[in-house]
Amino acid sequence: MQAGRAQIQALEAAESSSRLALEATQMGYRVGVRVNLDVLNAQTQLYTTQRDLARARYELLLNALRLRQAAGLLEPGDLQPVETMLVR
Image (cartoon, rainbow, N blue to C red; front, side, top):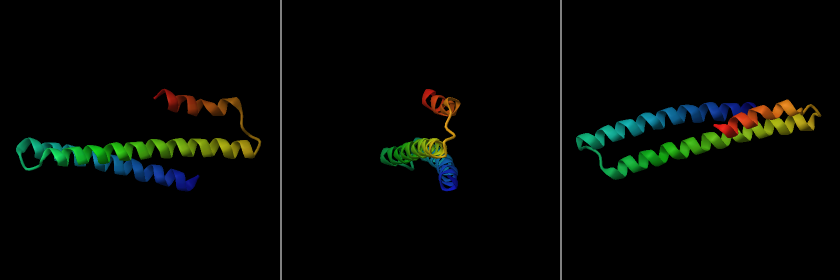
């Protein structure tokens, strides 16, 4: 669980960094020092990071539910975070 939380924190930082890199690359494209391929690569990096972050959040949530199930503590209210996550 701790490793999953640490991975999520790292991916959140990477997402922020990728977003800034994309903005900088777009600005460079507008002023003519970057090419369209650079922008596309920056977008790909951002979307890949966002996908990995969503997957890590999902896995952490699933592992928490599995842990509660194995301990015999799983209750219907424990599924509320799953519903909230799926609605986003």
